[in-house]
Structure formats: C-alpha cells, structure tokens
Image (cartoon, rainbow, N blue to C red; front, top):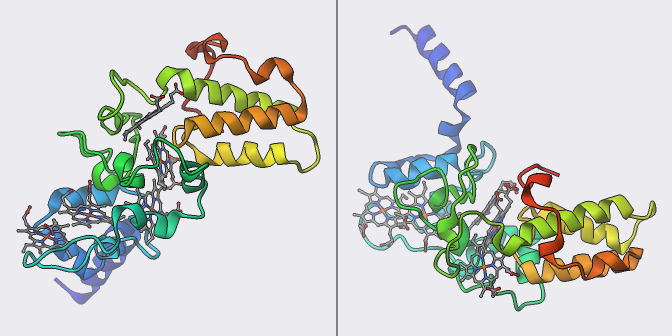
Length: 232
Ligand code: HEC
Ligand code: HEC
Ligand code: HEC
Ligand code: HEC
Ligand code: HEC
C-alpha cells in the first residue's frame, strides 16, 4: 500500500472514528481480555473524544496479573466527577434518600441485565437509544418493575413540573431554581422521589396554588395524556 493511501485511511479513521481514538493504548490493551466491558464502554457517555473517562481513569492498571481494582470506593468513584451535577445533588438531597446507598450511582447505572449489553454495566446508561430500560437496577429492591414510573411517581413529578413551569413568576425566584434543578436532573425524581416531590410542593406553594399542593398522584392525568419520555 502506498504511503498516500495509508494517509487517507488514517485521516478518515480519525474523522469517522473518534471512538477509536478516545481510548489510549493502555485502554485498548484491556480490550483483548475484557471485550464485553470495552464494547459497553464504547456505547457510554464516557467515550468522548476529548478527555475520555477511560478504563484506567476508574481502574488501576493491570495486565491480567494482580488486581485491577477501583481507584476509589464505589461510593466516591462517580461523585469524584459528578458531585456538582444535579443528579448527585438530588440523590444526596436531605442525606436520607433510600436510593443513596453505599454503591451510590453504580448500584443503578451499572446494574447488569444478563444478555443485554446496551444498558447498564459499563454503558452506565439506564435507557438505550431504542428506549429499553434497565429495570434490573430496580428489581433487587422493588417488585414487578416494568418501567421507572413506580407508583406513578415519575408521572406525578412530570405533571408538577409542567404546572410549575406554567405558573412561574417572570422574575428569578426560588421556584424557578427548584424547577430547573428537578428538570435538569433528568430522572423525573427517581434519584430521590420523596425529596423531589417535597421540593416541588414547596415551590408550588411559594407561587400560590393550594389545590396542587396535596393532590395525590392517583388523581393526576393518566399515562396516555402525558409524554414521560419527552425531553423538557
Ligand atoms: C466510570 C468508571 C469506570 C470505567 C471508565 C471503567 N470501569 Fe470497569 N468497573 C467500574 C466499576 C464501578 C466496577 C464494579 C461494578 C460493580 O461493582 O457492579 C467495574 C468492574 C469492572 C470489571 C469486573 C467485572 C464487571 O464487569 O463487573 C472489569 C473486568 C472491568 N470493570 C473492566 C473495565 C474495562 C476494560 C474498562 C475500559 C473499557 C473499564 N472497566 C472502564 C468502573 C469503571
Ligand atoms: C492479558 C489479559 C488481560 C488484560 C490485558 C487485562 N486484564 Fe483485567 N483481568 C484479566 C484476568 C485473567 C482477570 C481475572 C479473571 C476474573 O476474575 O474474571 C482480570 C480481572 C480484571 C478485573 C476484575 C477485578 C479484579 O481485580 O479481580 C478488572 C476490573 C480488570 N481486570 C480490569 C482490567 C483493565 C482496566 C485492563 C486494562 C488496563 C485489564 N483488565 C487488562 C485479564 C486481563
Ligand atoms: C473522571 C471523571 C468521571 C468519572 C469518575 C465518572 N464520570 Fe460520568 N461523565 C464524565 C464526563 C466528562 C461525562 C460527559 C460530559 C457530561 O455530560 O458531563 C460524563 C457523563 C456521564 C453520564 C451522562 C450524563 C448526561 O448528562 O447524559 C452518566 C449517566 C455518567 N457519566 C455516569 C457515571 C457513573 C455511573 C460513574 C461511576 C461509575 C461516572 N459517571 C464516573 C466524567 C466522569
Ligand atoms: C435508584 C437508582 C439510581 C441511582 C442510585 C442513580 N441513578 Fe441516575 N438515573 C436513574 C434513572 C431511573 C434515570 C432515568 C433514566 C431514563 O429515564 O432514561 C436516571 C437518569 C440519570 C441521568 C440522566 C440521563 C439522561 O439520559 O439524561 C444522569 C446524568 C444520571 N442519572 C446520573 C446519575 C449519577 C451521577 C448518580 C449518582 C450520583 C445516579 N445517577 C444515581 C436511576 C438512578
Ligand atoms: C437499594 C434498594 C433500591 C433500589 C436498587 C431501588 N430502590 Fe427505589 N426505593 C427504595 C426504598 C427503600 C424506597 C422507599 C420505600 C418505598 O417507597 O418503597 C424506594 C422508593 C422509590 C420510589 C418512590 C415510591 C413512592 O411511592 O413514593 C420510586 C419511584 C422508586 N423507588 C423507583 C426506583 C427505580 C425506578 C429504581 C431502579 C432504577 C429503584 N427505585 C431502585 C429502594 C431501592
């Protein structure tokens, strides 16, 4: 092959496959022995061209010999980068969330559904591009989970957000902060259902809407009336 063709190949590889170049050589070496983790990581939001969060960001280096344990405990690993994000702030919330376990984000985002590689594990995704949800993350603690809308909580939170958005005062307010916080969290309250509902009720009260404050989830519009998966 001439040098020219090689160059073209190389350039097009760089252009079409930032994926390949997001991983360092060390990380690509992990592939030979851990192809599943590598394949999942490639689907993950951590596979980014600039400053990839790669195998050795989270694991000690190893080559099959000796342990390749985590650089930080599971409770600290994800928080070491995501502590300022709304998801972490909501999860820790009042400090008492049932979902704020020792495994923290890993418990749900890395839960594994056997035979399904597009969610959970090293994808760290709760939902894949075709909308399949990793409910395996919930079944250790909740029975009969088909989606994340347990006890209609996500639906309730979606409704409360919509209402709040429509009634926000024009000027900056605490209610606006709450609205943004819960909206940007992106889990429709799953990270801390109780706290999310509490904040929304207080924010609703602060803009004045007594009938909405204590309305039970069961009375809210049914699933068909609302798009739970729509991005806000
Ligand atoms: C964002 C941090 C992070 C990155 C990046 C990461 N891992 Fe992991 N890895 C973990 C955590 C956390 C566990 C433990 C999972 C658990 O306890 O459920 C783990 C577990 C593993 C395991 C044990 C088996 C398993 O799947 O639980 C292997 C093997 C592994 N990782 C390989 C890799 C390889 C190879 C890469 C790069 C392609 C990689 N990891 C990238 C965090 C990470
Ligand atoms: C030459 C093959 C080989 C390479 C290369 C390799 N590993 Fe491993 N790895 C293994 C074997 C073998 C085990 C132990 C088998 C088992 O318990 O599943 C293991 C276990 C692990 C575990 C499980 C936790 C533990 O310590 O027992 C993690 C995490 C891991 N490797 C990460 C990595 C990462 C990250 C890389 C790249 C830096 C890597 N491995 C490169 C062969 C390899
Ligand atoms: C070394 C820093 C670092 C670590 C450690 C880390 N992440 Fe990330 N994470 C990032 C970056 C950078 C992005 C992509 C940019 C962004 O959206 O913030 C990202 C993106 C994500 C996203 C998608 C964010 C979105 O808005 O869609 C999720 C989910 C995620 N990480 C989960 C985890 C989990 C779970 C862990 C622990 C196993 C973890 N991360 C550990 C840096 C990190
Ligand atoms: C109790 C399980 C659980 C825990 C623990 C958890 N998450 Fe989530 N997370 C979810 C669910 C469910 C969603 C909603 C996913 C969906 O509907 O696509 C979500 C959504 C997200 C999103 C939005 C993804 C997107 O597509 O916009 C990010 C980012 C995220 N979580 C990060 C984290 C981080 C960081 C932690 C740890 C601080 C964490 N999560 C802990 C269950 C959990
Ligand atoms: C480590 C155990 C554990 C895991 C894993 C877990 N949950 Fe929970 N969850 C709880 C506990 C405990 C409560 C509080 C008691 C209750 O309401 O059942 C709770 C409460 C909830 C609530 C509020 C219910 C209500 O009626 O107010 C929702 C919604 C919820 N979880 C959704 C999820 C989803 C979705 C997942 C998976 C992505 C998940 N949980 C994973 C333990 C867990």
